[in-house]
Image (tube, rainbow, N blue to C red):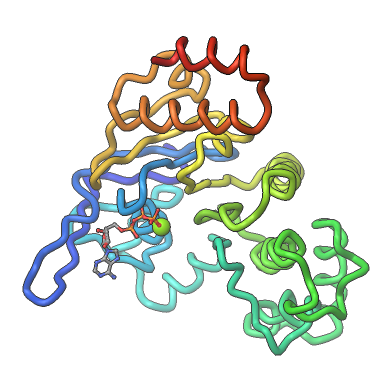
Length: 268
Ligand SMILES: Nc1ncnc2c1ncn2[C@@H]1O[C@H](COP(=O)(O)OP(=O)(O)OP(=O)(O)O)[C@@H](O)[C@H]1O
Ligand SMILES: [Mg+2]
């Protein structure tokens, strides 16, 4: 049994009488301890899929099972408990602007009923783990993007989740900061054994951190497998396009023009 099992998941939205098929018949299994990438173009359905994993979006059809438990079978209270086992971070960090780093991390702990002193001790350790132990009194407006994402990661870890969902968590960051945040996620995966699901439109993120990847296009899962294998021989048009774009970006950033030409030819 996989930790996350998505079975024949379909999600339709209705807007002013028009039906949008955001996801169509998605089957996906994610194993415990994996760092799993889900990629696709804008509008492909990535956020809808990741929000289905913690039932922030309820499927129109199909099932989501976490550790074998069908989320549909849970009461609201049980679902809230299950959600506390699934942390989430976002592109725009979603920090509370009026609270400093320490209080942002304490927030979910206090909601869960932890005593203030105990919550602060735990939050302090978490801020140290994510590398910003010296920033506990800083407000979000006083932090860089990378530091804000570190606070968000510490906050997501506060309730000791088994799964961490990352929706475009590095898309607002420069390449160097992206690299350091991905390094931190890898460390967290190794240290706590947390399963990490990374939603991104950037192949470079997948190649840096993920072992497995699924590609969605127009709400359909078009390809899935080991990252190396898919990079070597992408089969779907969506994978080819995403990989090709990645190589173009790679060339622009790092390669000499003469090497670049060789790389582009190889892909084309
Ligand atoms: N709450 C909603 N109501 C109506 N339509 C929605 C809603 N959420 C998503 N959609 C539609 O579902 C489709 C998939 O959207 P989704 O946000 O999952 O895409 P995405 O892959 O995350 O895109 P991006 O890379 O731009 O974030 C889009 O056509 C979008 O307009
Ligand atoms: Mg999205």
